[in-house]
Length: 243
Picture (cartoon, rainbow, N blue to C red):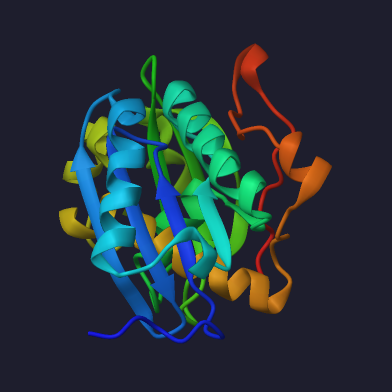
């Protein structure tokens, strides 16, 4: 298969906010290549290996990449730092713009065209989850409730009276969802709840096209920090407010 034409946007997307280390090459027509490995906290040793493997398999070099997208948080402190550092390391030498994509927005994107609001969540440990609510009824995640840290047991209680689709790896940390009445909530299939770089890349492409997210270069990229949401590690990352 011949490589895509250079004029076509090609995003190299990285997802390291959870124990899944995922890399994808994404164009407006879909994913050229993607991988996802459940690596625990071993992102650092495998991320560049997967980037190199996907570029070689697609017969691309970094000169063929128009943007790098990275899942910016919230999520694992260590994973987010590794992903963002890797993204900067790929962008800065080649002068490629970096697109920071909110982790929960990318998770919500995996449940498109939902008639109910989508609550995306990631396990925050300590019995808590990072959660945000999105409208995906037109296929793209529009922020309804800003991401916050909540006790896992309260995730369902906060949506009482508001029919909701729950998704993301944080679902597994909230046992209350298993017994929730179907008329007021639904849980996305397991394959849709997993963090995925292809979703990060797709959200980045649409957000750059519409101006909903910045494509950072220079000093703005160098000073970018992950979105932690909790404790002294909270950084000045930019949440996405929808397109």
